[in-house]
Image (cartoon, rainbow, N blue to C red; front, side, top):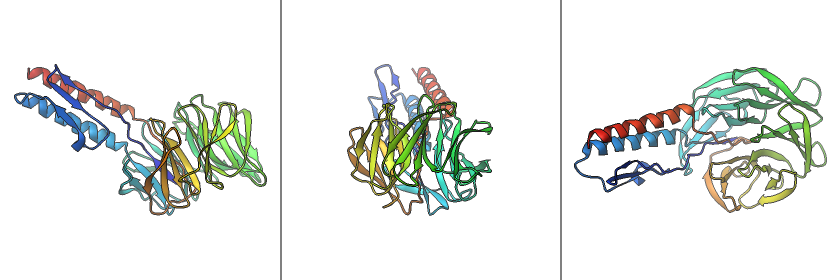
Length: 337
């Protein structure tokens, strides 16, 4: 399983008249440029540097690439693919799904212990909800409701459970005869769930927010990972045929990518529309731009499959901190005029 948390890419410019400009990018502090700063504005320069360091720390807090390896720990990688250490090593039992909510909490489904573990941004885990039978994929909607795929107590039963942020669980849908695996939720809270084939072709079911089966997409292969692109289309990772498919809103299937794939199991898009794919077969993560051009993003130690990939958004407290820092810098700059 691989969890990917992408750095938000933006430029922040704070100006002091026409005399000072700070260009803040998603690179390291060494690449931050400060141009035309007056030498007699040392207090303002110091404040600006402090703001840059604080903002960089905030961005890097959400700039981790997390991979579940050997079923017992989660490793952290930078957005350039460098291994930066272990994110979590407890509260894990054959993790099979991961997803972030909008506050930056990471939820992990433990196939072995049947619970959902919640991790804080710094890797501290607590039990969120227990009592599932072989939980697999996870997804989150616009209201931070969590969706869990698992097996029911009845023979050959598989279900999707919706869990509110407060932990209240309810059954959304039940399907007999096949096992749910990949899951994704679009911006309209439509739920897509792939079912592994017992024989014949794979199926992707589309459910309404109330659990009504709206559509069945029949396709080949085995789809372990699903994700929604910035264009609103559904993307699926075909584990068996090493292919990423693009499904339009009316269910038309087209090939998005075939290069750089080796048993792909997890998918996620970043804010720029780049697609990241976790390959269980060769323990790599491949990155694709919107045109399908591929590049190697990272090589991991030993990916534990199936793999899930998720992209968190900046949390509200982090955005509040950003505003506080900006106001403080402006106040200091005004005082040194």
